[in-house]
Image (cartoon, rainbow, N blue to C red; front, side, top):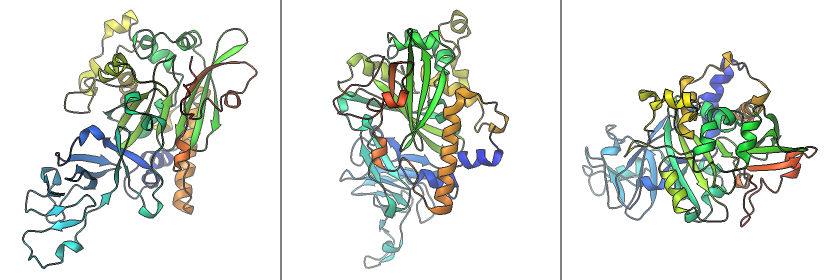
Length: 428
């Protein structure tokens, strides 16, 4: 069980909170690059860590992320005109550049210096891979840009999507480091999903429903090892890395692309889930990319023009009780991503962890909570930089291997969980 005050510390991420301050030490996904496809395109509303912001791309191709509301009368700049190197408020014509600096107030005399004293909050916005990343902390402590492998490989080797999840970021993240539910919730998908089926590791998942967990420290977070029985004298290990605060990777299956998530708080009751698939050494096939676009694997089919899943809580996720009865989908819900989100959202906007009854299979979740708590308090009380800020901490992989029973999973797999360009993932 988790005391209520600790649950609040871990789940509240708005301005002035300890966990909000922790998130502000990192580069975070703000939106997909596809949302700002060209210079002077329409601005986009962005809400992160309970802050309401506007993202835009100016006439020179520079990206900006600034306070949503005009400094004059508080009108939303989403209604603004993106033109001639800045975003102009439609109400009275005040204009802002990508840093939030006011550059024109039409009602003021030409020789006035009024504009120089008007500046909205602004954050850097930088494209790395398919994502536009922002850093919302102290500019003097801005770390190097993200170096996650999925965002570093050539464009033909990677694909990124996003979806809105209607619950707190932490209960969504905790699903990403929980390997034990795969044998139950996703058992149907292991047989039918084009981005999962055919891998030998699926057999181990289905034959051993009682995985044993070991958790090892990583420079940026944790490695969560889930062990299942394999052939005589061997174990099948699925190794999930978690890099603070919210990056997780799913252990690979066969030669399928490797996938994972970044979980970004919108506010305390909603989060964005950025989902990636990539292959370290080859382009994605047309069939793989199409399957991702169609919502297979860990991606979702979204309502056109939005990032809200077609299957959502308002329509009970289009649950099919007959498919559940036939065993096609264990929960009756189609799609791995929505199978996860449906149950995580069912807990409520913020789950009451004081009522939990955890077991040894939850050791990765327990350790992650402990590490988040310690890091948030150390940052708050002593100014200690948390793990995962250093880009060197991002150079990790997930792995799936069969090892002799006497071997330590982390000692045997140190190379497998470290990014080595040009070397394929360790997969079964």
